Amino acid sequence: MIITPNIEELLLAAAHNNAAWCAAVSRDGEFTAEAWVSARRTPLYYPDAVTLTRDTDAAALVGGMDTASPGASVKDSFAALDLAPAGFEVLFGAQWIHRPAGAPSAAPVLEWAPVAGPAELDAWERAWDGEKSTGLFHPGLLTDHDGDIVFLAGRDAEGRILAGAAVNRTGEVVGVSNVFSVDGTPDEEAWAGALALVSSLWPGLTVVGYESGDDLDTALRQGFAAIGPLRVWVHTG
Image 1 (spheres, one colour):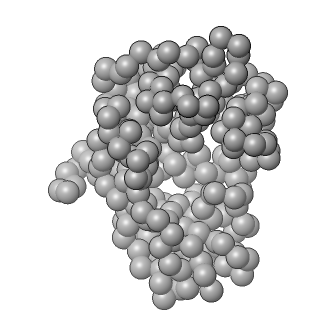
Image 2 (cartoon, one colour):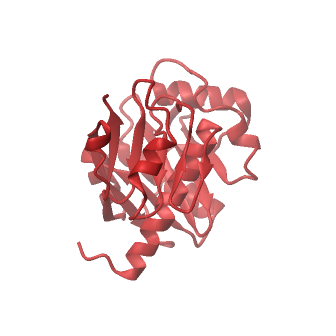
C-alpha cells in the first residue's frame, strides 16, 4: 500500500486515539511525542505501550515498561519496530481501518442506546465477556472523560444486550473497539448499530479502529477501508 500524506495523517490519528483509549482503561501511563507508556503492568488484553510515530526509540520504549512481570506487550502502531532483540515476539498483526464521515450504513434491528451508569456498564461487560463482569471497564470511563468515551448497547425487546461496542473521540476521529454480538446476533448488526449511534453522537467525524481476520472482513463490508498494518509484540523473556 502507498502511504499518502492523507493516509499517514489518519494513521497518526488512529494510533493516538487508540493510545488514549488504552490509557483511559488502564488509568495509568504517560504520553510523550513518540509513545504512550505505562511503567506498571496494564489490565488483561491491554498493551503496556502504544507507539505514536514510525521512528519511536525502541530502547527508550522498552526501558519505560515493566518487562520483569510476565506478558508485557507493545502495540507497534506502524509495524515498524524490531523488538526481538529485547526479548519480544509478535503476538498478532492487524490492520488499521478508516470509515469516512457520512458513509451510508445499514439500519440496525436492535434498539441501540448509550450505556448509562455503573449497573448498565456491568451488564454490558457481562454480555461482552460472555460470562462475567471483571471490572475491566470501570465506571470512571463513563464519568471522567467529558463524554468522549461511550459504551453502546443493542438490546432486544426484553432489554437483553445482544450486541455492543466501545467508542472514544479524540480530535476529529472516533475510535471503535470491542465490537461484539451474542446469542446468534449477526456481527453486521453490531457494526450497523454502533455506526448509527456514532453518526448521531458525533456527526461529521471519521471513524477509525483496527481489526484482523474475520472481524476485519466484517468491518470492510460495513464501509471501512484498511489503511495500514500494526503489530502487537509480547515479552517472552
